[in-house]
Amino acid sequence: MILFTEEVPVEIRNMKEGLNEKDHKKVYYAAHKIKPTLDLLGMDIAYNDVLTIEEWTRVEGKKKEIKEVVKSLKDYVNLTLKELKKDFNL
Image (tube, rainbow, N blue to C red):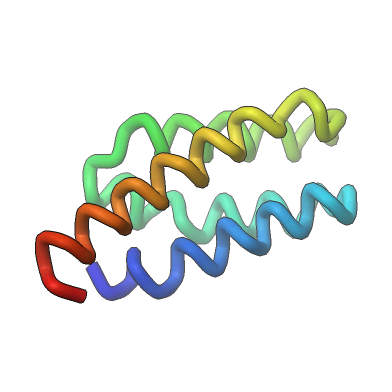
């Protein structure tokens, strides 16, 4: 859980920075780094978003094509963080 609360938000920021910089590799590495954590926690929606993002980086798609997926992932992660902090008094 510590891994999720500390590492995932940082990688989401890296992903957004990579998008803004049109750096597909940066986006890929950030998405790839959080994928096992999302899988381990059974966060299927977020995991599928990461798979979509990874595929987008492979074809070097345009920012507008993936912007909503990244936003969805960010929103889902933020909601989960909020719940974890509430449930575990973090």
